[in-house]
Length: 496
Image (cartoon, rainbow, N blue to C red; front, side, top):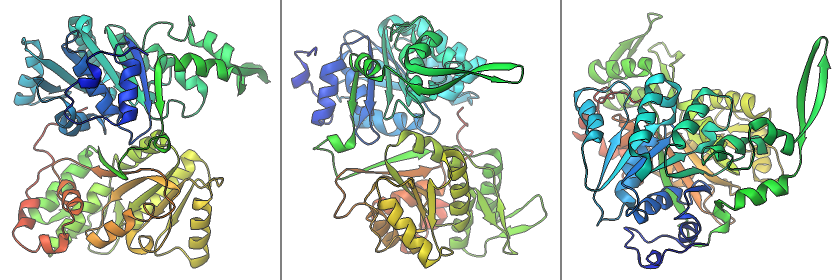
């Protein structure tokens, strides 16, 4: 373990926890290193601190993260953790920038006496424009730069064009980092492309197929005139683990002793065009006309806020009482979180439509019986069975979806260490009660709470008020409600 003589006395903005300090001690000076740190253990801070410690060797950091995550770096992580004595700037990638955003992007060409962070979403590397931009950055700044791939499982498919582009860009940088809580989501073969981003032949193989032959058990199958190979198991896994351990740091929440009891974070969700149009109709005119000809109107401010929240969630209720789906990115964000999170997960939504749609989606993607729901329509026997199975660590039930008004009181759900708020209730009491379903006697681990938020919408105000323990119904009786309704999701260019 290489230790920087200055590390113990480094002027961190926030003192690292012991496991974060251990991660820095092991990998701060490595050209290639993996932070396999479970969600909620603070891998973002480790990366930022590592960048600051290397400031005498680098002046540029390219951060690549999924669409719902990358704005966290700009809005939360960098301001919170970058040491105060170090000047830095943040430039955020936008595929179709407006004038001010274009000026910000072009500023990367200007000399800067400090650290430049360029934050980009991984989806951009699926486009030629994004690939060219990332390659330009690597060629210009790579010799004195660091690249970090946040949630590196997004490049686990070695055949994907995006993965190939990401690996090519990564190799242009002198320092390379990959970061994720669960590097293996489907099989040990997920590791190849992620590790390849750290450098050519990081695992010692010329190709993915050579890697596969070493660690997969393959049977040759014949179906009619077609022959193919089927993976039926894995081998030499201990050897693979030992290789990975040489250039990685692994920590799980249950292994840490000094984390706070609750960790709060957000996942930003970009609105679809359909959502943005309907949101602004309701926001500006207090009504919208659907393609079917059905009218949605809002006779009061609270109803207006409710309809706006429904649109953000992915549906809307007409004046006739019919529920109509609205295209949304929110379900995809949930599936991304489920892939990243380890252990059992609770999802809260105030809307029946969300609960029903998510249950269908999760069971179709992760397997029948993986997910169960608890809301007004759930009968007593099904409720009792779901709680029992969710609390059983050996049960296949991994995801509990509930309405906080129905399931947010009295239940014990301490098997969960991750909680997603899909659509918040306006009621402060139900928020507090629902948080405590898993944070109570019997919970031995830190709990991570994730709020899904669409920028420049009432999401931001609702979550902010609830976290500050402000009763929204009282808060919005005055003029502040009108201020909330002035938020325009189209006031910033969409980032892709």
